[in-house]
Length: 394
Image 1 (cartoon, rainbow, N blue to C red):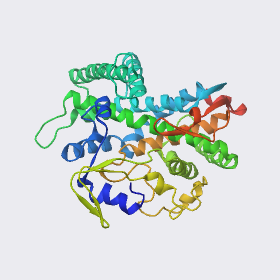
Image 2 (image 1 turned 135 degrees about the horizontal axis):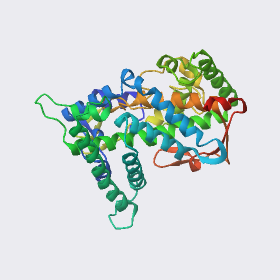
Image 3 (image 1 turned 90 degrees about the horizontal axis):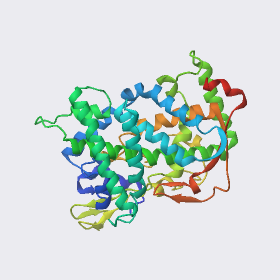
Image 4 (image 1 turned 90 degrees about the vertical axis):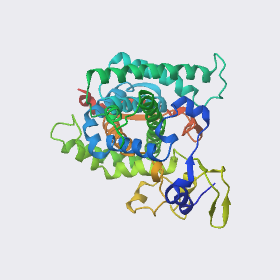
């Protein structure tokens, strides 16, 4: 277990070729063996470039109207004063964003079939891998096969119609390596499912924590509201659509996101396996041993973040020391979709604080893991429209 920035960099950046990603075989089977994050080397490098180019800041600008529509639709479904499981609501939101980024437009039937079967896979992903009919794992394996069939249908449609869409699926289908070889349908399907998996729970967990931290600090919430109201007033189109410039001009909201990611440390650690004997600072790491860089320990170390147990977004007015802030990992396997994740957080917070007020139900001092950390029971909360914001949905 590695709890220092230097050791994490040694494993994840400087000597990444000596430590391979490692996951239980049951999880590789569930996602798909060709998914990006199970690999290293040339195949991984090619795929990472595809995903990064598809989800770069320049590429995701065009997603803002779609992201806003999803955010507004999500919030409209919450505003009746009933108790909402915030985490589950955020999972639906982040799944819709993932579909948008991967496919652009998708037929309603195909989207519903993907959602239904992905939900079954999601429920069985962390279950005990006993392939007995009726168990969560067996149901998930069956749903995973159906997901492959649905994706094969979508892929074949794209190829037959020769649609050169500029979404992630289009980039995957158009890829050719130096030898002129393209990805086969199974490789494309595995990577789509892998990206959906990587994009959903982590972002949903982060958004749930952001709501909790803002709820717990009303002074901070009012400051964020003031910032977002100013953005509304500056929009000549009457708050009907955010611009890319406006999403970049949310300094306090952005700091709230950064601090939430530090405090919650959604991805608390990562696994690697030594492919040869490796020596680090006089210690021998034998070939085959697992290595765990502990991001949470680094994020909560008072040497790097003063009073780390306190939620203080203003600490990010000073840039953290190198290799001490790793919410998206680091090195070749860091999250290639981090810009999209931050953009969807900014957009949802913008509409949330402008349109709704909320109240957390019950005590929320405990944490549960699913496997990512979320407030107990998914942060149950009631949401209402702001009395003077009725017109914002019109």
